[in-house]
Image 1 (cartoon, rainbow over the protein chains, first blue to last red):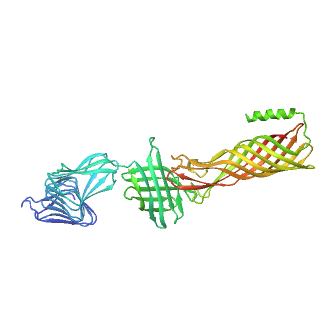
Image 2 (spheres, each protein chain N blue to C red):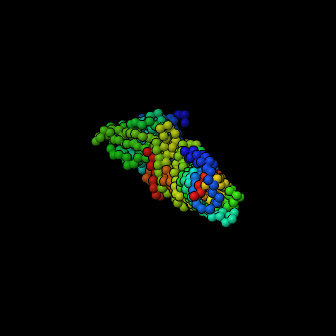
Image 3 (cartoon, each protein chain N blue to C red):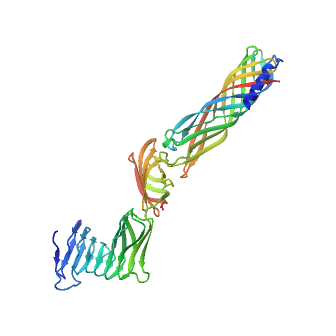
Length: 296
Length: 228
């Protein structure tokens, strides 16, 4: 698309797409019959629409399905339905009403995407934050508006789920900004024990992992899957990576009197999940049915 | 100190002029020698590091003690009981070859012991060739220790230890010579084999594992006896 897209005010463009479509140029209104609220852009379908231009259509933007990314701005209202996801890094010239998912990105360099809403921001639904594991701790403003009403019903994370964070609507009482306070992104210690349901029956698992003062890996694991005839203890752990509440470690271990490689990924939570795969082809994963995994 | 005592006693024995013309009767003496043996540890079917995995190691140590005995002679045949007690050191250790970083160590140690043996000998005119056998009990400690949890070691630590008075059997033989006076000097070999030991330990993750320890050894020693 090399040229701008022009649309008549009061007209509508509907993007019903199932894959990704990127429009780098602006979608412009004809500026002749003045702004109105009957036309606009509607996003349908499970696909992703990227609007990267400085759009000047004045009708509302409806996100009714899939995902709409606006890296730039729109001059009208944005309405996110419960089935839609909206990511913005720019200006919404009208109001923002979200009962779906509002997405934000916090990058490694300490910057966050930010939606500046000129009108009222009415918040509900979910705030989903795509957090880079190397993001720095601190406070990130992800939305501003002269008047914020409501709060997000849920906060979810993709990429990395931080160990501890806060979501604030400031100033209290008459908020004008939504801020994410990241106090600890990645865990530093893992401990857990419990049972998961394996394909051959219950599997008992215990894990511990951290780095000591000399920055050496101190990690171990016990696994007993009597149904599959697999058990081990005392693994040689040579890699350990903390990513938010997720911990991946691996190395070699003696299983049935043979040395095999192993990789374990544990995710802290209530109760937490774990997956283990061995070089001999054995693997098991699941949510703990008893016990729990803590990553701090 | 015990060696010095032995040498002094030997000197006294050789310089004593009185002569006992019979093996008959009670005697008491001192023992000094060395032990060379072998111990092993075996993991259980659900074993630490490896399953049903046995590894061996050599042990050594000294043997020092006192003995009391009684001889009955029938022509050239000499029989009787012998009781001894003192120190028998069975000391050694080795890493389990299948442990990562060779960080899991099996260890043996012993100190006090006692033995009750019977003896049968043939008298070659002041020199007795004898065979012996009986029961031996040793205060024996067996351990499996994994104290390293940094690669290349495995990440788990474990401690298993058991100390008990372990009984077993001993057989052997030797030669004893009666000097002029009431003294004799004895050179003796004993093989002993202690009952296997089942012991368990716990890892830093709280899991319990079982091991079986075995130990046997060879004792070569001298003894100096006084016949009452």
